[in-house]
View: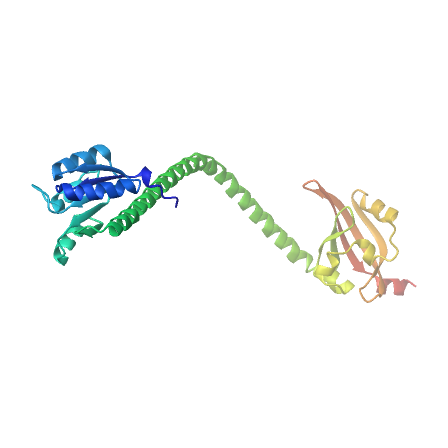
Length: 294
């Protein structure tokens, strides 16, 4: 932290002129702004008026002593956060504890030592500056939090309005998913190999029988096209068949992963689903029928 002493004001409350002279000269030479009060009541008034960054408070004052003055400083909202360092010749532990109990942050013992005064004052001013920065950051954080809460509140109505629509869409997706599972269940119990292909003749669905008949795994087939399993296929022939309306029945030859070729009868239906052109093919092995016919 860049610590500039001339930005801090220190209030000294002491009824001994010699003490005041020494401490004032020392602090002013160090660059601090210094104000003085020679009794407790004056100290209270000057603290309220000046709002110093730190108070050096003598314990032995005429009238109300330093402990009472500190207690009153801490009771007032305007001065409660100003750090108070006691100056005293009293060294008894009980007296020091009294000072901390009423809100003091430190002690400087008399006779006053220059190095000790500078060190303790500097330390507590740095702590006070850090505390103020933390308070400012907390205030900024609170402001950001309030802004965020307002945004959240503004969005909540819109979210609630769209929530019902989202639930309806989720419900529809669930029904669609259940229907797809049902279709997959049904197709996997057919004797025919079932292929669902797109306009590029790429497999996008195959049933268990297709995998068994061709000897490929489902993952392998979904990376392939009809050209990979039909050794006689030409582009013109395949696209012409794909583009016909209604049910089309053709005979073709399919090739397994091991290279074996067998005859199939394929029932082909083309349709469009959500703007995507698809073709469903149901292929049955007719090798035995071909042998009997020959």
